[in-house]
Length: 168
Ligand code: SF4
Image (cartoon, rainbow, N blue to C red; front, side, top):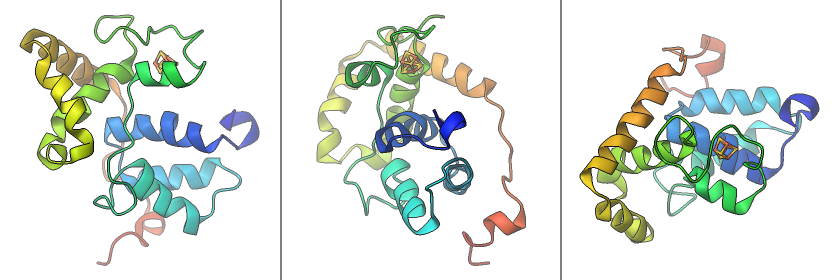
């Protein structure tokens, strides 16, 4: 949809592409630039606070009281995106597992020090704590393997892109 129409529904931007970026730890300035580049209706004054606050929770929680993170299971429940996917949204580990499942738990483990005391995250951290150690280790390894295979560009951006994001 994005590539054909330079457009996607707000929820697809937030829950699919944005969620993937959140779970993978994409830099806010890189994602802001990507949204500005690919969506015909993106303009800076709307897109920047939404990306920073709603999508990446990178504003310290000013816009949202919790990160908008979601697993593949949740995306499957809320949409029909998974019906023809090569991955299974029900599996968390293994070759057929939806990558968003292990990335989701990996994100929660990684950011536990910052999110643990958030009352809206209590239930989900309770679920994490009830999992067996072997399951948590397998999920962590699956997510780390996936992340290690992503190509990334350290020091993203040309000076003209990043000039607006830093004060020095
Ligand atoms: S199963 Fe496929 S379509 Fe569904 S969330 Fe995972 S990767 Fe996306």
